[in-house]
Length: 248
Image (cartoon, rainbow, N blue to C red; front, side, top):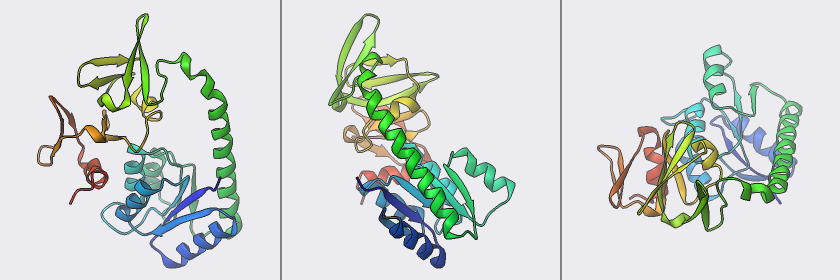
């Protein structure tokens, strides 16, 4: 299986250096962009396995803000590559939990070792995930085209397509369908890792929505409407949602 890498870099010389190294290592180069809008556009079409990202990029969002936007909907590891080495920038970047932080200027050996260590670690994690998947039936969920929610001594079968949205409630999460609301003993962040990215998106720090169930979006009040229910939409996630909905 090929390992897909996206490059987000606005300096041409560094972009070319990154592209040549990715090709040299034999990984799939998904593309090189210099701004958050184009980066999100590529990610929605073909999710990368790793992103090499500069912090100072073109557009309204810098690399750290872009990383936060990406992690609302995707669990993609990021290596920050930047000339900014002040404490404030590092503290901001660290909040997004990058796998590495590399300062410019760098040489090919440094970057190559960093990428190869990251790829090796990620591939090992994927193997462990596959091996442990047989034990998932012991959890509150069993995902296929549907899942089971454990309520006391009963399992309720819920189709993924019937879910409108999910709401965080401390260390628990509410699953709202058109007919019923279920309480799940699982943090929303953990639950989001089990949901298909093409169907679900986090639109607020406390909410994940089913994109196919959205009936309308109130852009003035930042509210998403589903049948007789509504969910919040943060300003930060508005652009990404509109792109996913093919807004024109």
